[in-house]
Length: 174
Image (cartoon, helix red, strand yellow):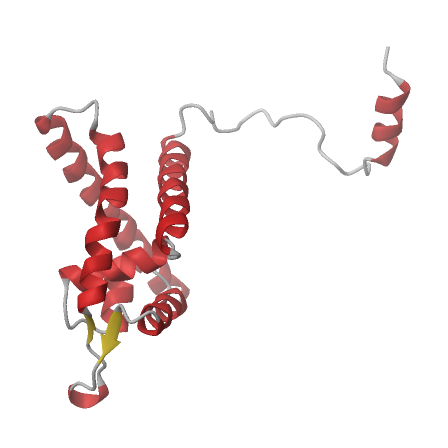
């Protein structure tokens, strides 16, 4: 028998509401995109919490610092493409980092705005790097060198296929 509470709850459910699980659904414990997303979210959350606590900067700020360390003189547009982040997100981080004296923009050719880390930005990169590398250690801890090479190769292929599919789908919508 149902309790009075359950009966009241059922009375609130609209008649068109589906109240039973569908017959065909994903298996959440074995759906690889979900597992990858959960792992990524957990790693980013851990990294962001630690970076905010220690430096007052978040993961997107770190990504911009890291990309500027890898590619000095890159523009915000190029950086956005390299990171796979929305230009508005990159712009917000760039402005935050400029305000903090960690990044600077110069006037470049044809109206471009190359960006560079300042000395303080390079020191911040050095301080933040171990936090980010800890995520790498977590992912690779149980893998051999051969496994790591294969995993990275497969991930790069998957990214390439995803980008190709996105390009095809965007072309079909035009």
